Structure formats: C-alpha cells, structure tokens
Length: 207
Image 1 (tube, helix red, strand yellow):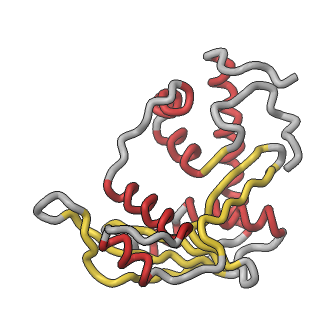
Image 2 (tube, rainbow, N blue to C red):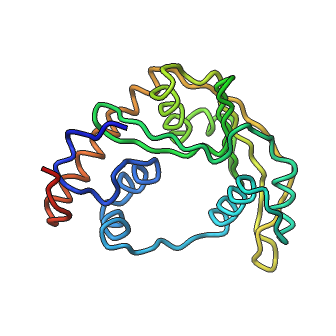
Image 3 (spheres, rainbow, N blue to C red):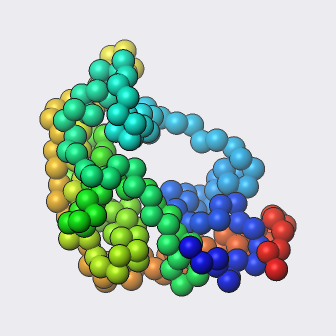
C-alpha cells in the first residue's frame, strides 16, 4: 500500500477501522482513553463469542465450547474467513476484516449473535456499508451481495450466553450512494483524530 502523504503525525493506529469510527463518533474522550492511553474496554459475552467463533472458523481447531462448535457447524461457509482488506481512500488508510468473503462472486458474509437483528437494521448497518466500501475500493466493483447470518442468543438463568433459535440469514446490498454518504464521516473522523493528536502532542512528525 502506498504510504499516505497526509500523515504528518503518528496516529494511535496507522489506519481507520469501523470500530474506531464508531467509538470516535460515540465518545471522543473514551476513544482517547482507549487508543491514546491504552485502556481496555470491558468485553461482554457477545463480543467474546464473536471473537471465539472467528478464531474457530479461521483455524479450524475444535474447542470444548458447545455453542462455538454449533455455530461453526451451521454457519454458512465462505472461501475466505477473517479476510483483511486495507486500502487508501483519498490518502486515508482504512482497514477492515470481513467475517467471510467470496471473492469470485463478491459476496460479503457477516456473522452475528444477539437479540435484535432485523431486515431493517441490516439494511441500515453502517458496518456493512463500511465493508462494502472496502470491497469497492480494492476491486473497483461493488459487492454483488451482503449476507448477515444471525444466531439469536440470550443469557440463561446462570448468566451464560446460549443459542436461542436457528441461524437466520438476511440479504442486503449497498449502492455507491451509500458509500459516498459514509465518506464524509470517515474524512471528518480521521481529520479530528489527527487534531486530537496535535492537541495532546501524541506521536512524532513523519516528515
């Protein structure tokens, strides 16, 4: 990847990810604490399941977690798992990791657990728009389809996360207009992170 000419200072990460974008927009002070000071955010059970499932699918190594094994068995399969895309968009380095990706057919797969996914929420998901943007930037073509595979879960009486129903698949698409609308937020976020770096004298000049 060509080195960005606009990076005049060291940012906490040499790229912008979707998780950074969301945290910045939600709570700038928390972003500073996490990315500048290295404070770890508490990890809930849903996030842990997502990470454990990603590891299981990527490595193929079986675990003793029955829920993870169930998900690994019944979640749809993709040629590429945990597929990383890093590109430059107008000198802003952006990075994302797709849960699943079919390069030949340009199909994005996303695996989710939780209680509240619906077709409307999937259609409006900024995360899926962000991933569609990465595919568009890398391959110069929009993804032909996006699939969100949702395993509904709930906390049982012992405080443990359990599967509560079958895996449901929502299909959606993104247009170039959707991606262009996201561009403004990405530019503003990256610019503001750099401004915060200057304010707190974070990093050294790359020049």
